[in-house]
Image (cartoon, rainbow, N blue to C red; front, side, top):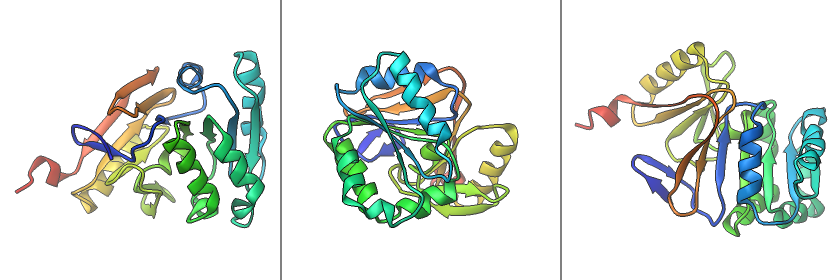
Length: 221
């Protein structure tokens, strides 16, 4: 388990990058610089892959590696061997923004999710954008930011909140009141929290990163 102060994350030989929104060219360039030469895969758990496919053109313009888009519309597709193989071969995996509920339901306990972790353990850079970043936490705020969903748990005890706004901050505070042992990471548009293989913590891109702790962190007694 990687750790720096109170922050803990699933350890691997690659980087976990949590980005608050799509408009983050500097974040993508940093991720490309940290990844080994090889295939980049953009994962989209959505009905329409247009946003994900835009990365094919962006990476080509930035001089990046060959980029393929993997659109998964169902859990059945997350079990297909060809999709798993593609993720295992990737040196950079970008989990695109979209519907967080669909993303969680599509990947939960599937070979595709395990393949992403295996690639990360082998050194791949994993970048979550928006919903892709939120899925890496332990819980997600959705449905008017009042409902709590279970996420992948790569950051134990954490809510990850993308597109961070004052409204989202209030919802996060309410969630931490219900879970005083948890903490929250608020990611503004264009800002990314990058967690490295040797306990590095870096801020990539522009924008604020806010960390809020539940009451039991501040008053453990």
